[in-house]
Structures are given as C-alpha cells and as structure tokens.
Image (cartoon, rainbow over all chains, first blue to last red; front, top):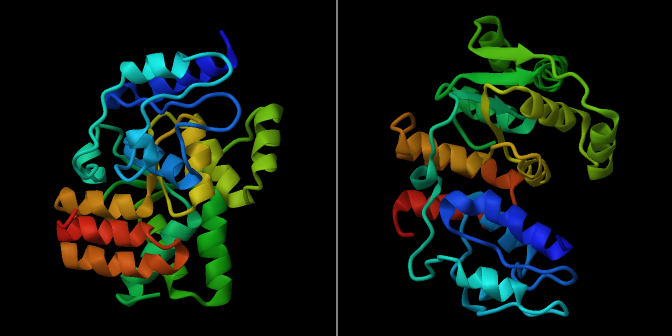
Length: 116
Length: 147
C-alpha cells in the first residue's frame, strides 16, 4: 500500500462513523487547507463549510487520481452549520480525566464564581 | 467539575493541589477537598514504552500532560480526557483516545441538563483567556442557538 493509500485508509477509519473523508495526498496537503481546519475536522468530524476543501472536487497528484476515487465515495453536507458537540455525543464511559489547567480553571470559577 | 465522575493523574494532583496550596490559591483547596471526599479519583500513570516516551518528549509535552497522555492510553475506563490545551488535544487524538475540548465539554453539560446556560456562558468567558480567538466564541454562538 502506498503512503497516500495508507493515509486515506486511516482517515476513513477515523471518520467512518461520520461519513466523512478528509482527502489528502503525500506531499503538500490538498484536502486539508490549514491546521485550523484539521483541528476543526478532528473536533467535529466534519469539514467546515467555509473551507475550500468543501468545494474542492478532486485532489490530483503525481500518482494519479486516487484521492478523486475516495472523494466520490464521500458523503458530506456543506449546506448547514456543523452540529455542535452536544449533537455528536456518543455513549462512552462516564469517567472523565481532566488535565491540570482545565481543572484549575473550573475550580477557580467554582470558588470565585467570576472571571479568572 | 460535578457533572461527571472525574479522575486525575498523580502529576496533575501535584500541579493543582500541592503547588497551588504552596502558592495560596483557593482553587487548590477546592480540588484537595474534592479529592479527600473521593469526588476526584487520583491514579498513577505508569511510563509507556521507551519509543512512546521518546515521542512524548519530541512533542514537547510538559510532565503533567505526558502523564495525562499515559493514563488516557492505559486506562480503558476513561471515556475521554477534558483539556483546554490544543497540543494535548491533538496528541490524544493521534493516540486514538477521546479528547474533549473544554468548551465542548461545557456545551455537553448544558445539553445534558447538568449545567445552566447562563453559568456555562460565564464559565466559557472564564476560559477565554487561555484559548485562541474563536474557540470560546464558537461555543457561545452555539449556546445562543444562532449557529
């Protein structure tokens, strides 16, 4: 499997329950226009409608149109705002781990009840 | 902090309680009280394999965040890790673990009826200084129902 295929497969597996594939290729990214969009995609499982990714029909590279083939199998809505985390909540273990800064921020808020 | 069972690593306890108490911060007293009452569990996060630890070093993660990653990787009963650190968020995702960005966690608490919208909005504003522009505003607009 070529590197690009590995990447596309991995991304499909990551997002398969959300019917979204981020199309990319080896070398300069073609389907992920910016780090912010990547973070957005990871956080929401969707491509932001304002992203040119949402309007990009195909990714072609030196190895042909593999990305195009995957793009054709993709279901993606670009006509509505992406759902928030509440709408995406999936059943999971009830235990949440917290990192230090998030814990301190919320504890301070709880104690002081005001902006920190 | 009361909306779901909560666990932290020993390192996070040191950073939030031990260091906080030494500095006279009231939030440290609050966290310590919750730990002593059993409302916050504290766990050890054993070292990962040498290659994994090397990768964590290369990311430039601080010790506390390395411990958070270790626990997330090793504890099967931890459903998600709540963080307001973008690097840690990305690293956890790349490790195949659920990471919940703090503003999203706050939104979920509202959606689940565990936090009032007005309180969530004030909490988001409290979080804002720690985050780049856009993250908190995104959550605020969603809570307002305009997007």
